Image (cartoon, rainbow, N blue to C red; front, side, top):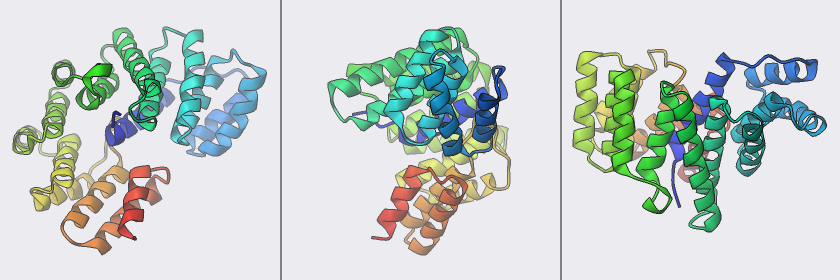
Length: 296
């Protein structure tokens, strides 16, 4: 029904990472151990400690939150939405938990096609992100999650390109370059590729090493099949920079390079890039699917 795919993937990774920068205070060793495992990217092991902890302490908000985040990363989306909904009920003013619940719900909406269940999850996810934005209006990642929703969801659940542009304007007030790049992303979703590229190039004239502008230029090339050489050049430059925590990581860069190589008729290079993406991020489903399709 709605396809939020890659944009939401990065929103999830950022929201989890953002939360780790502002941890709640743990009061018991099992939870400390689970958080340490989660921080160390040992998510299945962290979940193995969190699940029994939540069962024995059903009102432990922090344990619920981390279990929900672990379930998101392990592709247990419906379980994640249910767990995080419980955490939201216990801490309705915590914008971090609300944002993760919204993200989990939107991912669930993508799993159920065009159905009443999908519509329900989409509306819940949108409302949770809107509440997170109300509580923390300056956290750009939450607004980016709304942009991803608005630009791709159908009108029946609240999708609206105009609302996506409105959020991009709000982002631009807080971070002009990032807001401009988000606008380029929306233009690309409307297949206005030339305009989108022009917006990115204008940002790069102001800030030549803007990681997000370079990445977006590469993403537009990978999706449109246009200006592939320029897209590859931009992505290769990304690999020489350090992404901010809210920006797509190198796994995403290699995935996009794989798409460009595939569109350029270089399957061996594409295979290498997809494999690099999966080495960096083993749960990167889009890269796994691309590699599988390439090897058919």
